[in-house]
Structures are given as C-alpha cells and as structure tokens.
Image (cartoon, rainbow, N blue to C red):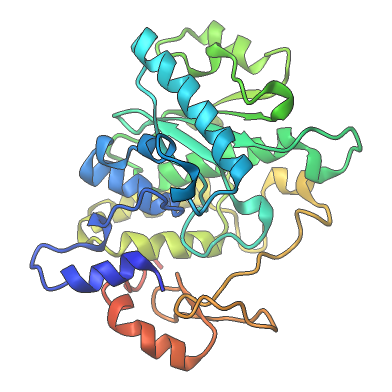
Length: 323
C-alpha cells in the first residue's frame, strides 16, 4: 500500500488538508512534484538529503543508480556553492504522472530546477554505450524525448502564471565517470551564442530546448492522469481556460506518436513494465490490473484489494477536471 495514502488517511480530518501537502523524498510522479514546488517552495522539495545518507535508505534505487545520482548531485552542488548557481535536485526517477509509465523508456531520471521552477536540468543515466546501433542504445534520442515531455508537462501545468522557459538535458554513463561539462549547469543568464555552442557540444550529448521549440509529446493517457492530479487542489481550476488552450500544443493527437518515438522502437524499449497492485503490491500472473475508474492513477489486482485500499485512497481520488 502506498505509504503516503496511509498517512493521508491520518491527516484527512484536518480542515486544511490537501493531498499535495504530503511530500515524499522518493516521489516518482513528476506532476505531483512540480505542483508541490509551486505550492510549498523549492526547499521543501529538495532531495539532496536523499543522497547524503547511506544507500540502504534509498530502497527505490539500485546500488549503481544511487551512486551515479549521488555523484551528479555532488558535482552540481559543489558548482552551486563555488559559483552561486541555483540548481536543486527535485526528482531522482520519475514518470509523467502516477501509473503513466508503460515501458522502460517512459521513465525520466535526475531532474533539477531553480526557485522560479521555469528552467530545468535533466540528466539521464545509462549503462556504457554500445556501438551496435540498436534503438535501445540511442541515448541521444531517449534524452531528447524526455526533455520535450518534461517541458510539455510544465507548460501544461503553468500555461499562464510563470510558464516554463527552457530545459537543458544530457545523458551520462560510466564511460564519462558520470561527470558533466560545467557549461551544462551555468545559469540562464548565458547569451544566445553560448546556448548555441552548448547544443553544438563536441560530445553531441547536450541539448538546450526553449519553450517555443518544444514538440507535442504528452499522450492522451498521460494528460488524463495529469488532470486527475490537478483535481486534488481546486485552486488549479483558475488556469483551466489557459490550460485547455495550450493543450493542443503539448499533447499528441489521438493515435499520434511523438516525433522521437520512431527512434526508440526496439525489443528492449518496447517491453511492458510489470506493476504491482496498489494495495497488496503483488504482480498478477497474467499481468492484468484494474484501473481506478475515477482518478485512473492507481491499479488493483482484484475488487477486494480495491475495497481494502479505499479508506485511504479516497482522500487522493479525484475525477479529472479538464476532460
């Protein structure tokens, strides 16, 4: 059972309770985290402490994933101190909205932002590069794919009030010892010429994507789940007209595919993820789970598990308001 929903059941009687007040350092829902940054401030959502403790406390990450992320967080943290840079890590692994990741390629990795939450750094972490030419080793395409999706999400969440400006993205591997070029995390006061040079980096693994360059990348299913998270706080309805207006610029048409999707087709990246029941956490043998018909964010293996989870889940279950 989701521990945050269990805690939510405890605090639900408070008149001012809102599910988005529940901050989880290991949060994997990008929509939830981005909204929490605007609601509660950047410092409350800083996950640096996650990588200052021993890895045994981060059961959501493997040994290699934890230490790779720790090295990157430390490198950018040192640059923050010496150069007065603004970057704060807010997600270590994420999907667009809870339950939206269907395949391995749907997971983003380490995300940083600043106090404005209008600019972002995305670092994807991969195994050693392979010269085989298979799409699952096209780290360039995968990284660009996630950069466009994250910027589309931010634009959808904040279409009018302080909309996002840009995202920088890169990938790193053990070959690079998980090190990044310092140009990557310089502040957004850099000139247009400097940004062009970043995109033309000799390694070919750095990208700077401005909002006006973003490609529609969110699927209809993802947006449906994003709307369900937005529904947790009625104040989000204030931006509903603007959100509906921007929707066509960030969401793929029904049956459409992102431009970069064609570059990611391979046996490895086409594998479906195996998810467990949101209540008992068991993975059904047939792989089939029932989706909550109201919020569409959680899935259960049986009606019994759904009923058992309802007393806690009901505080987090809202019908999407932008359908």
